[in-house]
Amino acid sequence: MSEFFAMGGRGFYVWMSYGVTALFMVVEVIAVARSKKTVLKRLARMVRAEARGNS
Image (cartoon, rainbow, N blue to C red; front, top):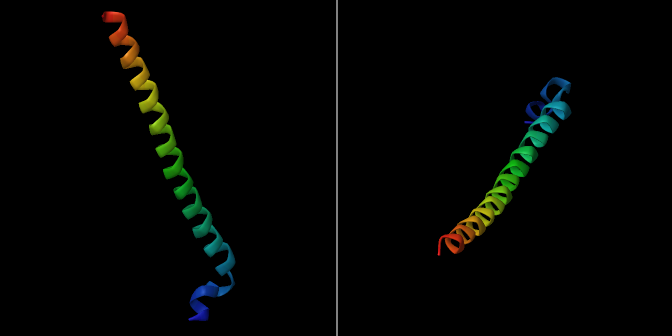
């Protein structure tokens, strides 16, 4: 089993690559969620402003 994790001496590079990729994937999901929240708030403000302007 330790040979699998060592990967012929390249284990550190391989597992760090997987870790960094996973980290960036998590950060991307969080960034998209925050961006969505901001866009929805801005859109709601625009709809309210439009409704006041047409009244």
